[in-house]
Length: 285
Image (cartoon, rainbow, N blue to C red; front, side, top):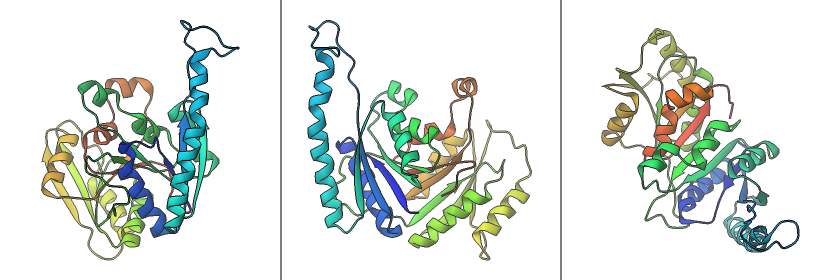
């Protein structure tokens, strides 16, 4: 892992994510690319026109020096901590700008914060973090905001839970998770939720054997939970088996299937209070 992309809006909701970015950057001696997206203002047609853009756009331009100064200050702080860091001030829509930057810098990992979701609408629609996790070409670590998180707080990675439906080949992805666990000296467990709302199409044993091969010679630790729904099973499991990180693999979905059957990954990203690392079925870290 050579390059980690960390988007920030400098709010409290990104403090916890920054601490995780510090953790991974130090552990892998990776370059941390800190980016901020300056969204383009939509001209307010009710205001007098100033040039071609209108007064509504000038406010966005006025904020750029402030954003640049905040990026510079954060970079100096991280460099003083011994982290190799660079910055970039982006312009445009948040999701598109972050995904474009990840491709430009050939990021191996995106670490992004997720703000507090205070109402039902927020949970249904999600956040920019869920959109980035869906669209990225590399793994994405989504870190929920915490009320008491302090800047510079030492994040920890001691227990990892890898959840799998055992319905498709995840050997390559799981091998990468094993590598992360070994790098951090973390305990790794596999969670299989047998849910009423998820049909069991493929035989479990061959897929478990693939995971065992990626895990090594020690017996693969697998926990099985019976539940009405997969999401409910995961949430129940985590209440009795505290973990620092949940790892999930998501697969590409078309618009209609996403509308009629919202992604399990999206639900976990918006409901859980621990970080979630999202792999895409064919991504390689």
